[in-house]
Image 1 (spheres, helix red, strand yellow):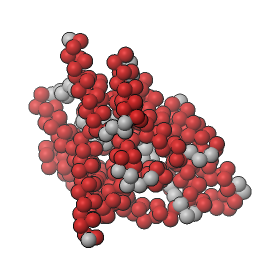
Image 2 (cartoon, helix red, strand yellow; image 1 turned 135 degrees about the vertical axis):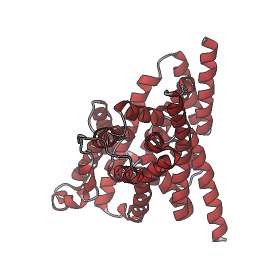
Image 3 (tube, rainbow, N blue to C red; image 1 turned 30 degrees about the vertical axis):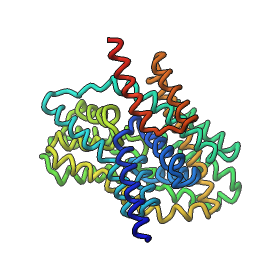
Length: 388
């Protein structure tokens, strides 16, 4: 009976995260918002508090946060195999799409244009993010202090401060205020949770000569990135430029920017999927797959390790306060991303209509977020065709 239940859970996980991987546009905040709507609101696998704790926890480890959240949700629903299936299938559609785009890029020397689709998709994504932030804030913002932290992080991020420092600062502030003088004797315990954050910035080197291409070097380079990169997926741009342009001399800066553009704008899924684009440029399909394996492998291992400690974090007042601060700061970052994206996306009456209409549908009728994404894309194409 237990095996039947586990099998059913694994099937649910596989179908959900394959679909989410194929329809997730707009960056990590949007992907996490989509997961929240599907897992918390529609399926009720977990509650808002546990979802927030997962978000806060994955912010403490390197790697693509959205993929790590997907893997953690798969673990909760279907065990260790669910972790692999959820994370793997969430990555798969974007990786496949990027390989197709990379093939076209190599063959024709340019990127396919899908601006019409994204014109309608992105306003719908804004609505999904807003709904998720609102829903999670009702659970995660439990006190005036957490309101201050969330709003402070929102404002400071918009002013250009580093998101990792904001997350850590928000968490430490909550611990300081809630624990008072006790913190001065125990603050090392709280800071022990995130020692690797201090290693966030990549070391920039200068290549004296071009290194001969090697699939082993390719894999190890992406493995190192996956194990050390914190923050937004777009921080990956600095890592890629440092390793593949300056240190190895395998790519030009323009190619690196194109890789990020493909993963961040044209194809679904995490920006880390840009590893597939670079791998294909350097060595075809085998290198693309090897690059993806290298950059995502650390995340799966770290999520497995993290799952052992997350349940006990809430039982400790110190770790619980730290996690509350991380959660409030994470919501501030999500709100800031929504504002930043909204400034670029909501530019005319049509995009305003899509945003407000999507927000109404998701709040009033709790419509499946995938339909909002697909519907927005279809309306974008129709609208552009009418104009032309």
